[in-house]
Amino acid sequence: MIRYLPYLAGIGVALTWGFSFMFTRGALDYLAPFHLLGLRFAAAVAAMSLLRILGIINIKVVPRDYLNLLPLAFFQPILYFATETTGVLLTSASYAGMMIAIIPIFVAILAVFVLREYPNRLQIFFIIASVTGVIFIIYMDTQSIAGVNPLGTLALLGAVVAAACYNIASRKASVDYKPIHTTWVMMVVGAVVFNAVSLGQHLSAGKIGIYLTPLGELWPTVIYLGVISSVAAFFMYNYVLSKVTAAQGSVFANMVTVVAIAAGVVFRGETVFWYQLVGTAAILTGVWGTNRFAPAPKEYHEAEAILESPNK
Image 1 (cartoon, rainbow, N blue to C red):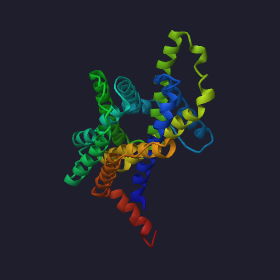
Image 2 (image 1 turned 60 degrees about the horizontal axis):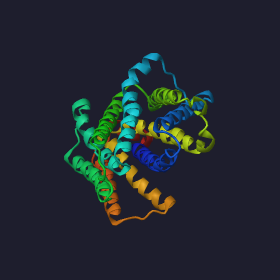
Image 3 (image 1 turned 30 degrees about the vertical axis):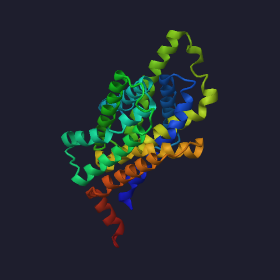
Image 4 (image 1 turned 90 degrees about the horizontal axis):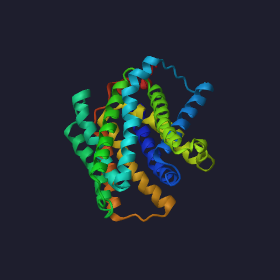
């Protein structure tokens, strides 16, 4: 049973991030991107601080830990969200989704050189199948390639590289840090940087006095994005990357497309097209195969042996 916990966490990440698109789309009608990001990560830090005060979580982080984990936090959330947001603004959400889908390929390549994690042939096949499923769904949308901006593509490529580097950095950090510590540093750095940028924008526009006003109407969105989609999801994802290879963990992100489609059908009454079903089948098959044909880590075998031992 223990060996399946990272996969259940990966599914939880996909569900959380998949539903976050509905909240983000609505909030961006009222807030600038960096304003939303600032409030989102501020809510994340507030939630984790409350949990620390109540004694529910125990986080002891010294200045050296912030310094050691700063490269990870730079890649995610700072660089990733900044480049992804810019890319979406210059292209389209559909085109951005198609670009982001190639993250597992970059992760698999970087993992070979940095972590010495070598996916086998079957895993490579299923990684490509998962990526192909996402790209196929979005390519079949006739609007997905309309108005493509070269600068937007470059920005999205930056997001792909940032996400891939985050996967590798989180995997390496898991040797010395627990997922809760990694998540805390990410949330704090995100809150500081994004609020600094947004406050600067408000100050230059003479609107600093209304910085928190949108919370009156958008607090459910901010709580979901900050507490659930940031704290809970990144904690689960950091946990996943601490237990399985970087290539295995990265393919769960492609399930976000599946969840987003399902959410659109259930909550927004959107229509399901045949190519979405075909692409979804490829994504799910790819995620299953990438993890099914990976050797189980030694620690899982040892843990299960202890649990199943009659002398435990």
